[in-house]
Length: 325
Length: 256
Image (tube, rainbow over all chains, first blue to last red):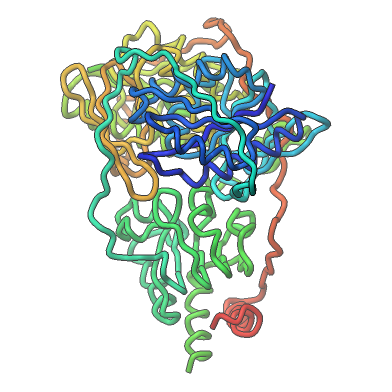
């Protein structure tokens, strides 16, 4: 019995969330009182597996096959199904990445189980693990228990501190060769690509004024533009604003947009869905203005104002101008 | 082509949510419901594909009796007919149990393409589409931005993290989970609302479908999140809070 953490790499580079999943795995292994193991999947990943072995796992499986060179849900599911049957872990832990969202539910179904996805906290409930998830875009929390074994769990970006390499300690690497046929892999992935180069680097901005659904319509944008210009801030937005075409996609903050860490982040009319929070929770100071006192953004804010942004923001612009004069 | 769109009815976005007294779900007494927004985008994509390629759009929905309203909305927007899998549970059925019911309900339909939203706004597991594909033995792709059927395949543009994308070719039949915002949502027209009343809605009781109802996970208790950060809430009229905020930013956070 063990806790198995599935690490993610693409083209020989780690997805950094893998190390956060290792920390979560460590915690679950302690609750269950079993060793921690890890797995790396791909083709020619021996050296990555060796590197991973320095992060505290008692053993690292190098799941290697030429058909795993490119990610496909069929290939990854087949390989991990075989590994899990061979290693028989009590729990399988993943980082909650876009790739994991694509195949882990399929894998869990093979074991008549469901993935407990996007977990933010793990509690020790008398030797059983309770996994904390957010419901309703973060408005409520829920303790979830696995119904069967192994439990399948993915952990949210930033919810756990990334594991660090242990000094002078390295577990063994065990090669695992899954049986996969080319005919099993139905989808044909092309090379990943990026669209037009970004012209706005929100990551470097010291002040950001970010706007969400609360702005109601495009014609109201000058309200927040005035705040941005008074502060000398970059204007940013949550996803729905960019989806509507009110601001360009490159100004989107969140898991599918940019990750920012300004000195001050003004969240104006943003409720604070998980996907948005992961993009801005590194901000030094967060100010939230929202009409809904239960908006999850207030969990992350240093200063919160419950009120009508159309009244509060213009007043704030006046005060900032006075303060700067 | 035959398109099936799986939609869920969820509490409206601006609902004020109260946990029920047993801590297992919500107090539903004053909640209004709407179509899960990501599913509305899946429906829009299916309707546009049908307009371009011809065929049929079938709405599939697992939900209690009240979900009939969401099904009517989908029919009013242009779907041709619907299958309503009636369940007792109002919101707590997990993705595995739901997908098992949906799979049974559509097995005989022999769809070419099943579309659904990438996640629900209530439980947010983000798995129903993927599990449905696995149970039906179909290929799938998630977080899809563009859908382009080509003969007996479909080429989709998937969103990856951090501004990356990837095109993937899938054999049909297939399941795709659609990213929100990929097309502009239409409103139901008056004519559409009228027509919807005459469209076929096949209601199937979950018990009639049989099959495994064991959930993949158990929601033990629901509660308001604890604040991890000490948030200072400022109060007063607009001018007063603006003055306080500037003061705090200047002298406490020292960022102005």
